[in-house]
Amino acid sequence: MSTVTQSAKPLHHRPPSLPRIDGPRPTEGIPFRRLGVVELRKQLDTRAGRWLLITIGLVVAAIVTIMLFVGGGAHGYEGYFGATALPLMLLVPIVGILAATAEWSQRTALTTFALEPRRRRVVLAKVAASLVAAAACLVVALVLAAIANLVAVEVRGADSPWSLSSGMLWGMALVLVLSLAQGVGFGLSLLNTPAAIVGYLVLPTAWSIVTGLVEQMRSVGEWLDIGAATEPLLEGAAMSARDWAQVGTSSLLWVVLPLAIGLWRVQRSEVK
Image 1 (tube, rainbow, N blue to C red):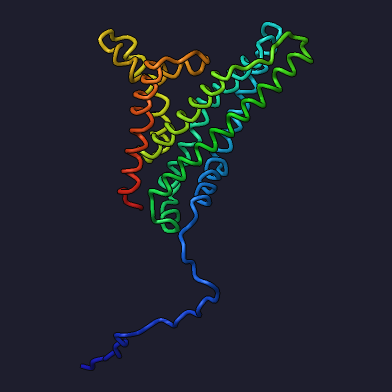
Image 2: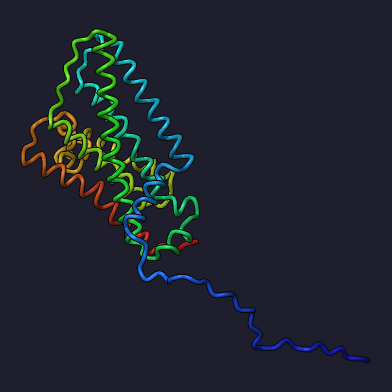
């Protein structure tokens, strides 16, 4: 019998060293402004986000076209502004949901949190990007309303005034910000795109229906129904102290709480 003995490999074998990269070494983290720009691009520079924006544009165009042929197009700048802003407030927050769940639904968490391990800053960048997107949507709504009213006056010959109350303008702006923040909050809380979209669209509506049908819960619904609480803002009506308090309490439930839960989950969820 013969025994074949193989030579053992060295225990302290080291791979060849890589050449040193010349140049200055970074001494600071990624600037927050750059994080915000990246998160803003995530809302727009994806196939789903791009097609959603195209769909929103088609919906707004259809609504404005119908309004031009109803009542001779004499709806006023304020009427066209409301018609263009409402679809944006309903659908644009879904773009925020897509950006909030990108790291978990598209498996980019390793890249994002490797470049910026401080997850709290990433969440804050998503919220800041949503505020910028809300401001951009408001400007777009104002421009589209102006174009529609101009067409109504010049083409249709309608007597359509150009007045726009400051209450309606700032009310629409506040509701748009709350809607986008709510969408981001649902996305961060659930970390799943389909579940977050369904939760954002269904849960507040279901709560509104339940509180409206059950008499014992109507008084609770007045303080925790964000749709009913923000309705006077959409109409540009004067807000009393009670109305503002109802906006605050309903926003705590449907905006602040999802954002807080989302921040907690993002900081503690395992990256896979």
